[in-house]
Image (cartoon, helix red, strand yellow):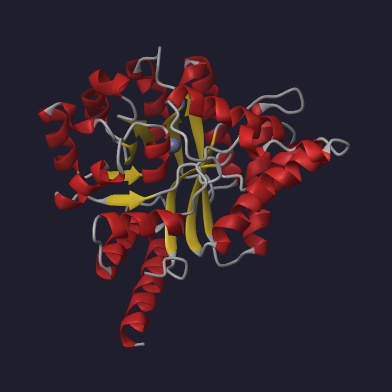
Length: 339
Ligand SMILES: [Zn+2]
């Protein structure tokens, strides 16, 4: 199956994890112009070796170093939009944690990303892009409060762009219940919730709590089946699970591609989206992820179409945007079956 030509929907992509080799090189040369032989993309990429989640989080420090000022953050963002557009992604929800550095405040970070998305889309009109500011749970509740306030404030300026809030970051040493208040505020302000959930074995105790709280989409959901009550609630609520196969394999949370929980979810006819998570770090693309799933789980073209349509349905796009995307996907598959 030629997955490159398929119009694709990306619902789970982190900005700093989605820096391609070319993007890293360009940013590195901007930051260290006198030191251009010393680009250590190995420090960023995860090639074949398996890492645990803590080591994966270390990898992001390299990208974070390169996107620590508005100028390079803007370039990185525009390049990421270009790279998804080149892979024929027609709808992208990008997520990022507003970060304060020596050179910018969290507010400047977020407004820089918003402006750069606007510019990126102007250059690549074939892709529609939305932004989901992320709460990094390892930074604590006070920063989470600030992030949501910023997202709500920025949504007034960019109402079509900021659509939701993500909860991500290393879940170790934090409790979901501490974030419920701030997530509730986000929800009451009209932001959708895309929450990383059941990403590691360490979160098993809170999975049910998260499902009871409710969210619009689940990131990963890898360890969701540990208790039957949790699994049943997931299926009952029909919350779409964003599946990131290569990411889970390389972080070692799934042992073999055949064991990936997307297989079980598809079997249960539960809505899923195929996503990259961090295509730069994990050296993949959305086309490759779809190809990998199609091959491993014997998915015919109409199954891929169904996954794409479900992704649109559960996306945070407006009703008009969803119907335009659905027609685009529908037309593509009908032309293919005639041609
Ligand atoms: Zn993620």
